[in-house]
Length: 234
Image 1 (cartoon, rainbow, N blue to C red):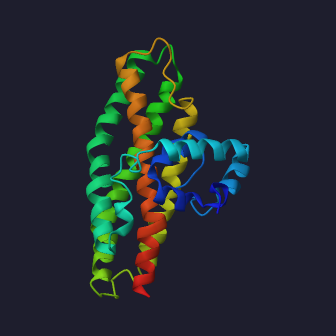
Image 2 (tube, rainbow, N blue to C red):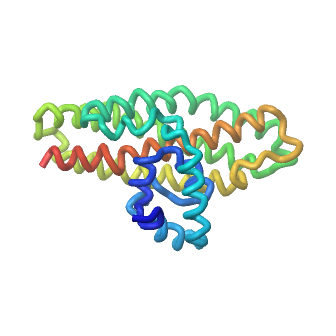
Image 3 (spheres, helix red, strand yellow):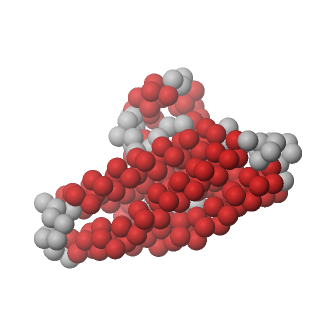
């Protein structure tokens, strides 16, 4: 099977190091990971051969872990995968979101008169934090404990089928993905202007890192944790 016939989800699961290239190309592997590379390139209006070349180069250059501990997470059992997502991606967001919100406001205050797009950047950062913070809480308090219980043999919950909270979380993933896509567009792919200070540079670097981590986070849930939990609960 050539790279263009692989689904985006399978490709990132096998080689997380290609994720930044997919983000740069605007190919959504977290909420639309079931599309093949060829299908996704067609939807985005990109040349399939050029996309394949870029992904081949990224796969060859990547160390194999994509900054995410390799592919070891794919071998975790259901409960351990929930633990991994919480200790890795949830912990990152809990630590990073408040700082990024404050930094976006600072950069808007200093540079907003020359770069009016920073008002939209700050607004989107606020919206992402407002979207993700309660989302994490619901996963940590409701869904992930249920998934761990399913791994231990439990099948009945006050909310009914595990499909119910998974459906809600998946919808919220779509909303977060849309906000991140708008942020990448507003920042012109996180391009810092010539008069951007160190704080401006730091903000855009951290926003791009936030996008990558959140895409990987959603990918692991949408394409591994959630389907496995549904299968185990049936």
